[in-house]
Amino acid sequence: MAINGKIANIAAIKQFCIVMKNKELIAGISAQSGLNAEEVSEMLAAFSSVLSARLVDNDSVSLHGLGTFEVKKKGERVSVNPVSGKRYLVPPKLTPVFKPGTTLKTKIKEMKTV
Image 1 (cartoon, helix red, strand yellow):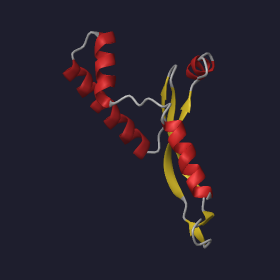
Image 2 (spheres, rainbow, N blue to C red):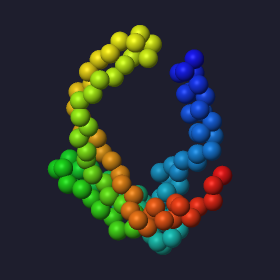
Image 3 (cartoon, rainbow, N blue to C red):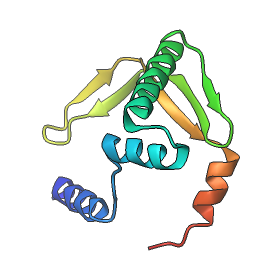
Image 4 (cartoon, rainbow, N blue to C red):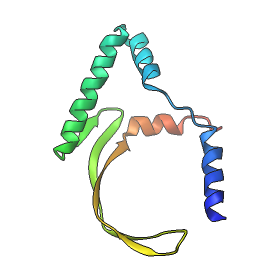
C-alpha cells in the first residue's frame, strides 16, 4: 500500500512539471543569442563534454549566477527491500551533484507558487 501511495504522489507531481527538451533549449538559446541552432547544438555538446571531463577528473565547475557542479562520495549504507523486508549493504559510490548559486536561489524564491 505504501508503494502505491508513493507512485500516486509521483504521478501527481509529474503533472505539474514541464520538462524542457534539448531541441527547446537549443531554440531558446538560439533566439536569445542570435546564433543558429547548429552552432548552439555544437556549443552545448562541447559544454557537456568539458563538464563531464572536469567532473571525471574530480574537479568542480562553478558557473557564476547559476551554481556549481561537483562529484560527491556517498558512503556505504544499509538499505531494505520494501517487498521482502531483507536488509542489504549498498556500497559507497560517487555521484554528480548540482548546488544552485545565490542568484538562482533568489529567482526561485521569487517565483509564485502553483
